Image (cartoon, rainbow, N blue to C red):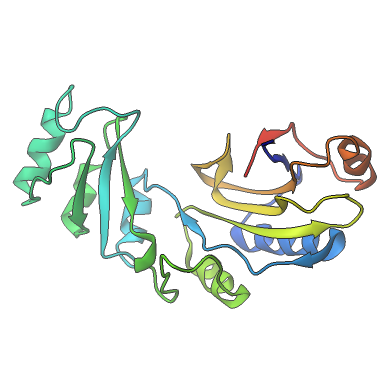
Length: 224
């Protein structure tokens, strides 16, 4: 199976609201039909500022190791001792520790480069996200964007892009305080991006179609 390609729309998007507005403009201008937006993926908390903001929304999260490093071994003993001193119980997983988010954790930043904090996505009011749902409403997205502050999240809309033979995995991707790398978004505070996904079955016409959009686009990235 082929992989969809995402192309960033290269234009100034200074804030979350303007990026969301641009994503919807692309759907209006280029799509024959659009699905409801996917459930947003909440990004990692990587700065103390983000953590302070996350405390107002999330109740729980997990400290995780990057690249499969075991926790708390392999140089992370000091970080574990700091968690232990804050009353965090040791779980069974060697790669993550589930925690209730408390103000005292703010003193843990900057985190060691091997560690990140991932909030539970279904704890973010006003949107109660069920793990059984695949989509949310445009009103939910408006509410999240209004509250996002320095936090990162990404969301996609599947759509049939006008003039492309196949709609499989076509649509628009929005990344707030994050950038798309390869099949995922990575936190990048203050950076907002909008991407066109041209699907998996349009290779023969994609260059002509992309040129005809009149948009200035970035290099192709592996997408959905």
